[in-house]
Length: 65
Image (cartoon, rainbow, N blue to C red; front, side, top):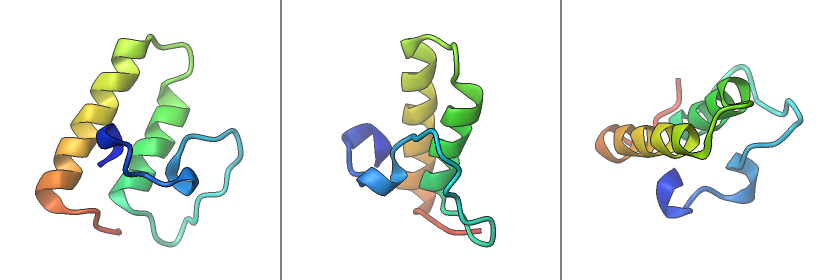
């Protein structure tokens, strides 16, 4: 989903911490992980991480946990 640009602007990486700690979807988790771990990484790392997250979301759905 993320790799196809389906994520809305609310799921795009941002500098703020507007994540609801009570309930987080897989797509929010991917975006948060990229924001936290992706600083200073190359474009190929970001693309691979987003692609892998998209595969999980496609296979299992955008579940909340």
